[in-house]
Amino acid sequence: MHSNRRRVIGIMGAATMALTMAFSAQAQSGPPLKIGVIGPLSGPSSDFGTPMLEGVQLAVDEINAVGGYLGRQLTLVIKDDQGNPDVGLKGAQELVAEGVSATIGFCNTGVAQKALDTFQNAKLPLIIPCATGTPLTTKFAAPSSFIFRTSARDAIQAPFVVDDIVARGWTKVAIFADTTGYGEAGLKDVEAALAAKGLKAVHVARFPLGVKDLQGELKAARDAGADVVFSYTVGVENAVIANGRKELKWKVPQVGAWTLSFPFFINGARDAAEGALMAQTFIAEPSNERRAAFLSAYKRKFNKAMAVPMSAAQAYDSTYLLTYALLGIRDGNATGPAIKTALESMSKVYYGIVTTYDHPFTRDDKDAISQNMLVMGKVRNGAVTFAHPEDARRNLIVQRKK
Image 1 (cartoon, helix red, strand yellow):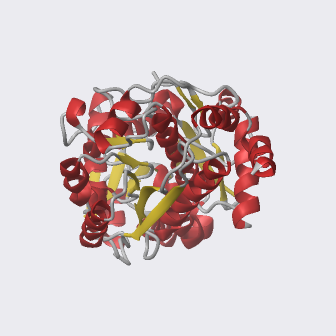
Image 2 (cartoon, rainbow, N blue to C red):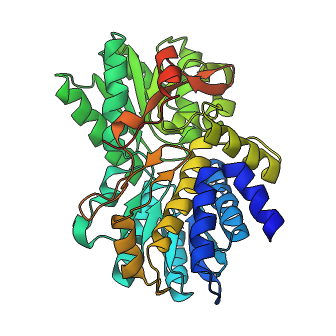
């Protein structure tokens, strides 16, 4: 155990050292503490569901190596929601029935929407590390809500991207949004962000997941004079849009939320994806010591690069935030209401991968990420990097919540 502790402290430094000292001071023992994990581990959304799970697994391995929670190992109860709302609801119900203390999960807004009541009614905290639909953390009154989030909600992503494109002089926006809960909420957020600038979309296209051809809608957007396409959908459909623009020889930029960083888009569109711009909380570059250590630890454990770095980093941070909250429950009575209160009143600062979390949640605010933490990413040579040199420089200084 001592050699394991030294190895983990070497990987993650101060954050794990703080955990080691806290767990050593509180060392007890008991049965494993069950933590639920749910997300799309198969199907068309697995490109960001799998790295979400891997981020949780990496963090749990490190936490267990230094003693777990009061000597209790954390054990994961994993459910594959397949990106399907009905499957996600069943998985959520199974997690509650199997006695998890809290759950980390959901990548798809529509899947999460259908399962929220299950966790809220059971009074079990849910930390959402990936799904970004704005309504997820507003469905329930904040003081009574058990729904937390560490991803950037679309209500801050959309205006962030709109600010960027307007600064570039692109003001004739065509919006392409799918008909899922994610596309529906994202469309509303983009339209609100444009309205705040005195703008209105010149064309709005709606389409179901699985669409193979959007030539008609793309031609209509082109004829409407659009000088930028703002897409709000997932990887495969984003690629359909990019490839359609290429076939039309319509050379306008494609911008959007974080889903434009997904492999299903970048690999599916190939050269048509080059230059795409998107909001990001984390870009897989070693811009500080903890990020470099995280990238190295991930590569060592899984022997591959991260498919969607934001998914892995946000899930990893979610797991540590949950554990830091558990440290505030000194009597070991880790019930759902006790964990909720602990998350809302964390006294310890967690120096995370995405950001530094100083009171990330309160009774009235269940979103950990604020707009100042975002940077613009850009697809360049088949990978995502910083769109602006100043973002790369600013990223050296970790932003705290505003």
